[in-house]
Image (cartoon, rainbow, N blue to C red; front, side, top):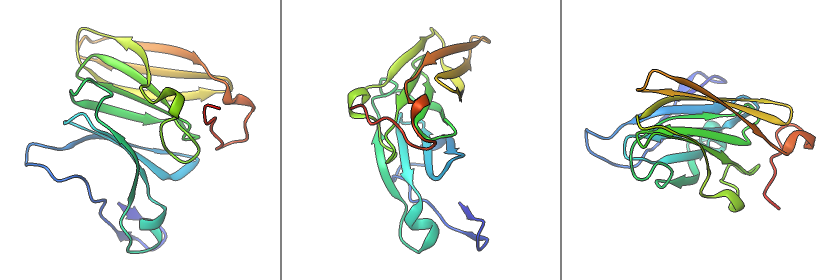
Length: 168
């Protein structure tokens, strides 16, 4: 990753694997620049806290990680909402998922298994998420050449910017 403050390049230590293991997607939250999400071909979705590694030689910290999001199949794409309160993902299992997050960049405990927004017979390869007041717009697409838009009502429209509901 490139630290724009001093134009230095730093690596994010990713889990060891073979030459056949790789990251498919990454996403950063506009309002939480220290939050990074990655998705890989082994099915892992990882949330990173970059605070320490952007300001020192310390390693980047994993704040949450799971491989159950797409039934053990590849997680093809991830997208964070601008406020960092929601993560959308798609994968080879044909599901589009929504993961409500805490302000600390972890999955909300009451929704740790995520919400299925779409099921397709074909793998899904692309996803994006946009928040508009009390609604999320999640768009996904894949091998079936269709683009799908889901609208999800959310409750954190009353919270200050950058503050996520913690599921209480």
